[in-house]
Image (cartoon, rainbow, N blue to C red):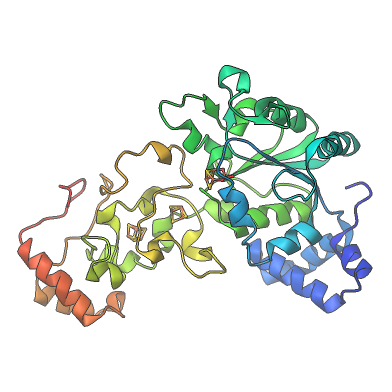
Length: 366
Ligand code: FSX
Ligand code: SF4
Ligand code: F3S
């Protein structure tokens, strides 16, 4: 943006080498899901495009999105904040506070009118004239509309901003709505998840920083590159789902052995997000890997689900394995490699007690 340097300009100012600049460009190319052949384009964009000015607001939320973002590992959140964007206002991440800081926001909105990126976390409380959520002495809904007026584009960060979120749970006494319900006429992108995966957020911001526009979105307004697959499609427990091998209880032997969590309420078959690919904490883990099914935290309305631990209806599943012969047959295949024998036996015993159970579409609950 006006008066702001490119990424390469910033590297030069700080005496950082061309080699480290190219390394960062390679990381960006990877996160954006671009082929290595696109690297020269990314390098050229990083040399020439000014860094985007970002104004970051918080509405009705738990600040978990910030907590997620500052734990971004690749690239480190500090790199994104300090190098790849010009973060002019954030009421939680900035050191400044109070009236001078609010004046700074006004100045930034004037100086970069029509050019800054507006990042919003949290739902928008509209009940009682917005007074359930006050920020800087005014209703958040008013502050949001004011900031959106001069924005080039709007990022809805987290399920609260994208869909309304937990604050909008029935009966929604504060009448909280999604950001796009009160903001229109601007390019808006949803980055849902409660919280969203930090690398997804940084990927979207970097795409804007590199190419000056938001990445391509799906029919729901989410970036295709990160929300194009269901959790179920990239789940490492999927071979067990396909083989009809299900954990029956949290922490049972089957669960520990990596068996599918579908019967324990997993929403992976209907949830779109990148958790199976990117995981969290630098690829360390994600809910399903920790033994808990996906609760669909990136889906609209997940907070009103009264049946988190009931199996989803209407999902075709394979017949549950119920005897040693069947186990033997499946163990012969690659799908169950790595299942501990004692785990298989323990679940097998339980399965035997349940002999006769038949799985079908929308079948009986476990
Ligand atoms: Fe919502 Fe984010 Fe969930 Fe929390 O800012 S998406 S409640 S993790 O914090 O908005
Ligand atoms: Fe993974 Fe859940 Fe699908 Fe099972 S139902 S394969 S645990 S996403
Ligand atoms: Fe959320 Fe499901 Fe991922 S609960 S963090 S979308 S595995």
